[in-house]
Image 1 (cartoon, rainbow, N blue to C red):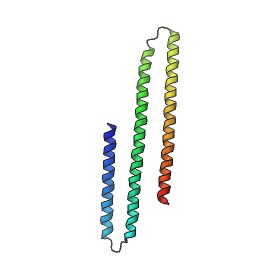
Image 2 (image 1 turned 60 degrees about the vertical axis):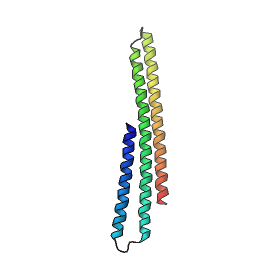
Image 3 (image 1 turned 90 degrees about the vertical axis):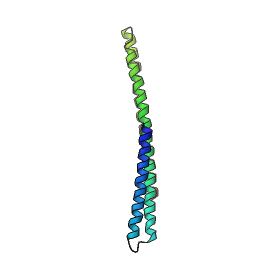
Image 4 (image 1 turned 120 degrees about the horizontal axis):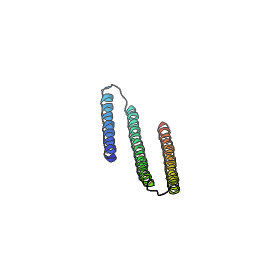
Length: 135
């Protein structure tokens, strides 16, 4: 399902970019004395837009993967929580509850660490992309 959404987003972004390129070329052709060197700036802007679209698509894919992992882990923990009710005595109930709590806490900890690493990587990549284009 997410694949179709991302594919649609990619296609619409590409179509939007193509429309912007065509419109820019058409408008610049109507201006008298418009130098060809100025169209290079438009081409650079188009390249940047394309890189930005790829960057954004990659970020969305990573976010989707993270959410899917979290969702699967959450379902697993919910199933385990239902099995806690099968405990035969209070000591077993306490032990299973503590184990589940530790698993859930560790799962959340790993998830948030992964999200933070992904975020840092995206910010670094974005910064490099922007500074490289500005130079």
